Length: 533
Image: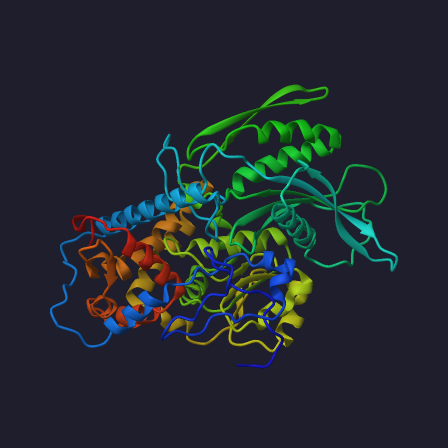
C-alpha cells in the first residue's frame, strides 16, 4: 500500500452505521477512521457498502472447496432471451421486497446508488425505489457566493423551501448535516470566484448519503442572475430521494425561467410541484403555474417507461469515448477497481459517471461514488478501497501527484486514458468483447436512432446481454433447503462455464461485493427453476 492520508469516508451499511466487515477470503474494505463518525462529511459518501453476511460468505468459501461431482451444467437449449428474462424477473422480485422493507422502516425511496429502478410497463405503478405518489423533492435551496473578510467568496445557502419546523432532535441534526454539505457540492470548484458579466448555465447532480444509509440526490442548475454589470453565479439545487435526471432537468428549466422574472415567482411553482404526486413509469403529471404577463401555464412532467434508465444519458458517454475505451472502463468497474474521471464541465462529469455506473445493471456499484468531487476533498483518490469519482480537469496535476494506488484515470475532454493498470485489454473474454464492440459501434453509427431513450435502451441491452452470457446460469446453482433458504454453490457455478476465458473472469467477478449482494438477494428469493438458464 502506498503511503498517504487516510480515506475521509467510510462505506456505511444500509442496515447499520458500523463499518462493513471484511469478507472471508476477500480484500479488506474500508477501515474506520477515528473521529469520522462525528463529521458531517459522512454525508459525502454516495454509495454505502451493504456488507455481505459473514456467515453466508464463509459458507460459500467452504462450499468452494472440493465437493461431490455431478453439478448440473446449464442446458444449451436455453435461449439468451430466457436468461435475460430470468435476471429481470429476479431483479423485479428482489426490488419489490426492498420496497416493502422501506415502507415498513420509513426509509427513502432511493435505496441504491447509483440510482436504479426496475423496468416498468406503461401505466404500471412502481412499488419499489422510486415509488409513485411520493413527494417530488424535499428541499429547494439557493446557494450564493458570499464575500469573506479575506476577499475570497464562499458558498452559502441563502434560500430554503420549505422551512421545516418542530423537528425532533435527531431529525434536526440530520437536516443540519445535509444543509452544511450542499454548498460544497454546488460550488465544488473552490473559492476562486469573481463577479462576471457572462456565464453559460450548467446542470449537474451529486449524491449524498447519510450515516444511516439513506440517500439524497442533488439536482443543480448554476446560472447567472439577470441584471446589469458584473454579478456572481448562484446555484438552484433540488434535493430529492428520487433518481430521474431528465425530469428534474426540465423542472430546473422552469425554475431558471422564473428566476429571470423574480424569485417570488419560483415559490408557487415549487409549492405546486411539492403537492403533486411523483408519477409512475410512463405516466405524466401536470403542474399548473401562473407567470405574470403570461397567465397560467400547464407543465407536463413525464417519467420514462424504462425506469431503471431514467437517471442516465449514455449518449454523453458515447460522444466522448470510443466503444473500445468504454469497454475498458466497464471491465475495470466490473472488477471494482479505482476509477477517476476528468473533465472541466460539471455536467459532463456527472452525466458520464452516472452512465458508467449504469453499465453494471443489474448489478450495482457498492463503493465510494462521487460524480463531482469538491476541490477540498481531492485526497479521496488516496483511498485504498474502490471508488468512482469525477474531478475537474484543472486539478489533473494535483491528482497525478497524489500517493495513490493503481487506478484508471480517464480524460473525458480528449477521450483517452491517462493512466491504466495495464491489463484492461485482457479482462473481458475476446469473443464477448468483440460482440459488444460490434453492437456499440452499430448503435453509435445508427442514424435511425434519434432519441435519448432509444440510445439508452440499446446500449443497456448490450451490457445486460453480456451479464446474461456470463452469469445467467446462477439460478441453477442455488441449493434450496427445506426451510426455503438458498445456498449458492460458487465452485459448481464457475465450473459450469465451458469457456476458459469466461471462467477466468467469472472467478474474479464472484469475489466482488456487487456479485455478493446480488447473490444474497437471490438466496432469499426462490424463483421457479423453469425460468432460469
